[in-house]
Amino acid sequence: MRMAELVVYGIVLGSIIALGAIGLTLVYGILRFANFAHGDLMAGGAYVALFIVTGFLAWIGVPDTTFAPLSFGWRMLIAFPISMLAVGSLAILFDRLLYRKLRIERSGAVILAISALGVAFIVRMIILIIWGADSLFYRPGVLRPALELPLEVKIRPDQILILGVVFILVSLLYVFLQKTKMGKAMRATADNMELARISGIDTERVIIWTWGIGGGLAAAGGILYGIDVQLHPYMGWNFLLPLFAATILGSIGNMYGALVGGLVIGVAQQVSTAFLPPTYKPAVAFVIMIAVLLLRPQGIFGGSHR
Amino acid sequence: MEIGGLLAYLVSFAIMAGIYAVFCLGLNIQWGYTGLFNIGIAGFFCIGAYTSALITTPKPTGIYAHYVHQVFGLNLPFPVGLVGAAVVCGLVAFLIGIPTLRLGEDYLAIATIGIAETFRLIFNNEPWLANGPRGLMGLPQPFAWLVDARYYNYIYLVIILIVVLLVYLSIEQGIRSPWGRVLRAIREDEISASMSGKDIFHFKMQSLVFGAMVMGIGGALYAHYTKAISPDVFTPLYGTFIIWVMLMAGGSGNNKGAILGAYVVWGIWIGTTFMTDLLPYTLKARAPYIRFLLIGILLEIILIYRPQGILGEEKKVSKLID
Image 1: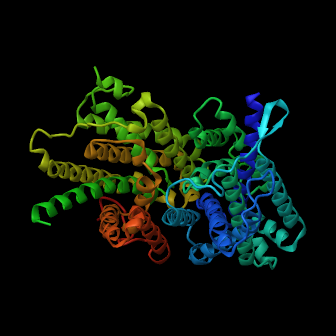
Image 2: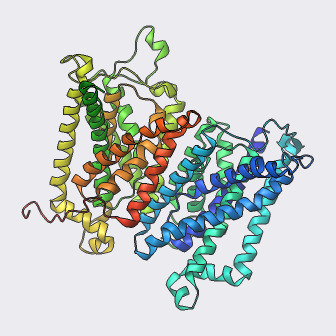
Image 3: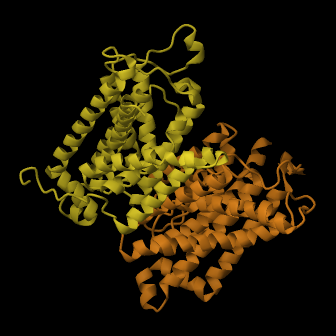
């Protein structure tokens, strides 16, 4: 049952895509521009964690032991939240330095998107300058035994943990958006920024939170991909099409849609490897996106036509 | 460097910047005049280059057929290659316009990225089509019999300048016509343009296809300049990003700005090669990344401090009032 296995791998990949897509759709919904740098924020998170794990924590002497069946240990546990914070702060910094200035000048959404494209290349070039163009791993050469599930599905403990981490992060975000004051303010701003502003919501604070959360989730997604597969300077670029496909499929601005869209794209990409060379994965996401644009451009969760 | 060497260097610089000027002019039709957000220029670059290569090279025979695979080879002259590249790129742009041009501008952007990536993947993974990752070599150069190979670049520079001039004049002609005014009306305010009875979708489609055809010509010019192409040439960096920086630097909505931007930014790019010599040996391989980082920072500075570019948009009402 090779197909069952591919579907399971697809869910793992899809949950990683979903973390990026949720951040992308939040930014899209609130700031109303396509953040072409989102994939590279994921890559940035993965590499910040790499620096912390193999550089900083090794330097201060945190032991390199792993948690029994997993491929990582204390170092990654410490690096994970720090890296999320760092990329969240980085996203806020880019907003303060660039996007906010363009917003004040009332530049159009496309100018903001071009600026984001510039940020994407800047982040990628910094990664290439520091780490070079080769693929890297958090722990090279670790034997990663697979568990055998029914239907001959082989899965690594790391992959089960990835699903758990994504589940926890999405749940936390759900509680944040539904229960906290800032979460409600974010939803109100996504609905109608002018109305939110005259209701006394500090929309600039909302924007800062949006970037922080979007950047943090992107970092988490990038690190989990690094644990599951590898780190590569172009991983962010390769994530871009799946991210947008997931966001459009799930209706722009809809967090739950992005989650579902991410899973659909992830499964489709992995299942396609049964028929196509795996390098075609970004093209698979693209074809699905075109099909959505032709058949239902507002996405599965969108009400009226945009 | 002796004078002859310096001159040859300048000529090769002017050729490459001239090829980029063609892409900038194509993007200027789409973005500068119509506000169409194409960030998959590399895709049209790639399709144009490969189309012209397949049209102008013969299909390999004998022993070569074992090493070079291509789906067809028509062995036709260079101008046919240029026209073929334009036609195929126009067709691809038409197909990509159908699902995206009725939607918001971001959709076209994402779809063009998708086209660029997909074609690069196809040319890389399908060896029967155009020899896979090894690419095609030995593309013919027009008028190559006229002079010694050492001096051929002078002839090619003339060809490039003629093409740039023709493209420039045809866009100027179009943009000063009623058609051009509709494009700019769409860019400024889509709703009011459609309330004036203009079919937005069709005008956007014409602009997208026209721009893509120009980009296809640019791709073909590149292919016959280097004589060898492979899929890894058409990356988002060299194929898309730098062209956007060029147009933004020169001034979008201004054809002279598009050409100027190509020469200025390509000059900065070539001019920073000296950095490679300044870096320690271990970092030399990474010098291009540092230079591209600077280009990225340049784009952000332009967007914030001089969004209109060096020249800014020219006021163009009609060819009758100049």
